[in-house]
Every structure is written in C-alpha cells, then in structure tokens.
Image (tube, rainbow, N blue to C red):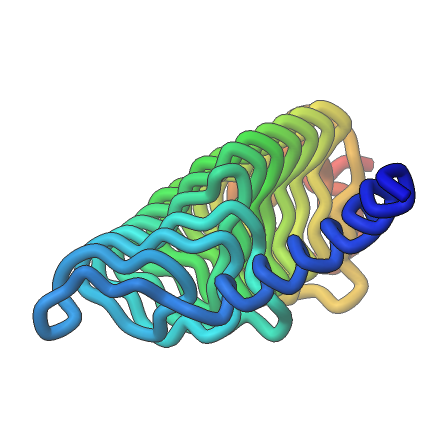
Length: 235
C-alpha cells in the first residue's frame, strides 16, 4: 500500500510541476510605481528591469529585459535598452544592446550592439556592431561591422565590414569590406548576371553598389565582359 502511494506521487508530481510552471509563466509580479521598477514574470510593459523565463505577452520594455529562453512565436514586443539572454533572448524588435550566452534573435529588426556566444540574427534588417561565436546574419539588409566564427550573411544588401571565419556573403550587393576564409559571395544588384566567386584578394570597380574590398571576384559586364582583379580587367 505504501509502495502504491509513492508510485502515485511519482506519477502525479510531473503533471503538477508542469501545471504550476505554466500558471506562473502567465503571471507577473510587478514591484513598480507607475510601471517603473522591477517586474518578475511575463508582464506587458515596464520601465526598468524585467525578468522572465520565456516571453509571450511582452509589449514594451525600456531598460533591461532578461530571459532564459527565446519568446513564443510569433515574437512580440519591443526592447529599448538591453536584451539579456541567460542563455537566450529575443523580441519583435531590439534597439540598444543584445547579449546572449547562446543567442539573440529579433523577429523584425535588430539595431545596436549585439554579442552572442553562438549566434545572432534578425528576420529583418541588422544594423550596428555584432559578434556571433558561430555566425550572425539577417534576412534583409546588414549595415555596420559584424563578425562570425563561421560566417556572416545578409539576405539582401550589405554595407560596412563583414568578417567570417569561413565565408561572408549577401543576397544583394556588398559595399565595403567582406572577408571570408573561403571567400565572399554576393549577387551584385548592378549586374543581374554578376556573381561573386571565391578567389584571391581583389577589388571590383564594376559599380558603386558592387565596390569594395572582398576576398573574391565579380563576374559580369562593365565596359565589356571579364573578371575584375585589383581594378584591372583580366584577359
């Protein structure tokens, strides 16, 4: 009889734990005055410090938003200040500083200083300065100085400095410096047929939207067909 009771408790305990965690997740303890101060849990708005396990109802934080895990999808809320991931964090938009032991994500836009132990990214544009232990990138434009242990990438145009351990590339044009261990790649907007291919250091003067130093070559048309190397057309 005693054994059966203990067995029942062992079976019921996980369900009680999950139910309690879910209930606590939906609640918030606000130690604030007019929304200024400290908030514990999934509060909607706060000016100050907000601590939560995983965001679901976030709307706006001015200050520090610290989480343990990435938000529920779709990500909501705007963080103005510091988005801190212990180890992961994210929001719809982050403007300021994003730091994650593992990673930092933004549904729409990520602007400012970004530091991630593994990786960081945004579905929209990425602007500022960032370092990702494995990689960093954006689904749209990337502007600023970014470095990734393996790679840096932009879904659209890139402008600034891109440093990738293996590669750096963009789906559109690259303006600035792009360096990758195995080359840089960009489909230059100024030449629809242009294609950045891995090669030795060179400079392409094809168009202002395709200019800059990159560890590759740009094949396309500009005053005739050919490969551009250090400002000269190769034969």
